[in-house]
Length: 192
Image (cartoon, rainbow, N blue to C red; front, top):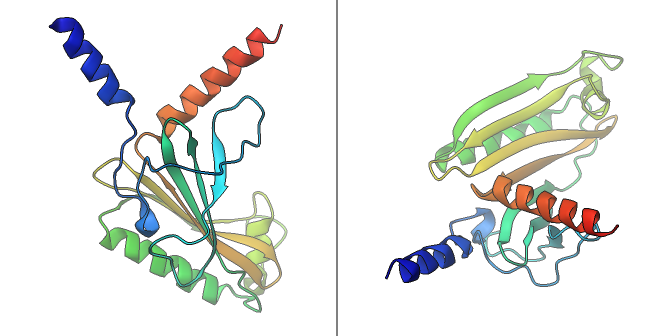
């Protein structure tokens, strides 16, 4: 009886979690057509063409996971914001996403909203600064009751041009990532 109980418990633990993910997706859902950018690494990426609940400002969505875990990370990229030298449109979208996440039950863990630390320090160089390493950051981090994590950030491209990115990780993502690294290391050591 103990063997069956242990086997059943092991099977249940290895099943993907189908918790609520953003944009109407489910954590653990299958990622059909996943690409593997690193040979031997089980973690893959897939473009998500039409999520069930798209965001009006989104340009693209990426899903990450493994064949066994299914979807465990989602990235939403906003449409490119142009002609916004002072970052007003980018900040407004960023603020609306943060407000929506807090309304959905995410608790703020950290917030970094600072620019002008190097080179690009004028008010109309907002995106240039964010695109330059060490000049500035506009990021928000949160976690929900299930342990899922979210990050919203503004990314700079050039003067007046940038985008907002929202990243969501299931509570299992770090375990999936570590298992992927272990599998990659094992495959590398077997190469000799």
